[in-house]
Amino acid sequence: MPKLLPPRPFTLRAAIVLWLAVALLLLVAAGTFITSAAVQDLDRAGFIGLGALFGALAVLQLLLLLPLRRGRRSAREVLSTIGIIVGVPIIVRGTPGLSLIAGAMLVAVLLMWLPQSSDYFQLTQPKARKRFRLPGAR
Image (cartoon, rainbow, N blue to C red; front, side, top):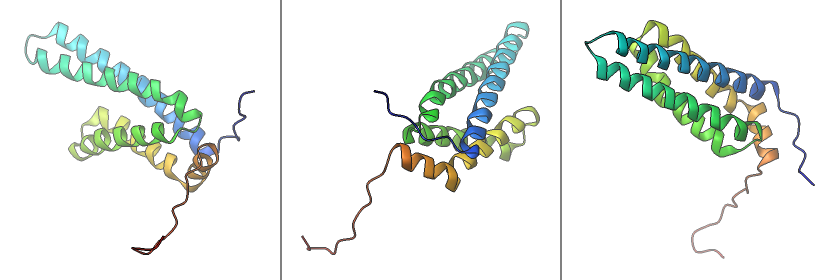
């Protein structure tokens, strides 16, 4: 019999919707970069590279949404890493079109780590509490 999951909190549902929107926007950006590479002669390799990178990120995010919905901590951690590593540099650089996507990524990361979401992950994948032991104690 399949294990019934507790209801997802609003914060996690909002994060899932944001990650889905970000992945779709990254797919659009990837298509735009690859189309620009086909039309232009200059910076062709750069546009193809950015298009491939954004496309791969979008596919990875879409693949991680199902485990995230099931309350897998690993999906939350990988998506958080992606959001911070990709989102912060884009925000700092201030790229107009991509800053909106990066901001949405960072908001989704924040939503996944709020107490309501963390409680959900504790219910779905309980983490063993470590006991404090003095060095040398048994």
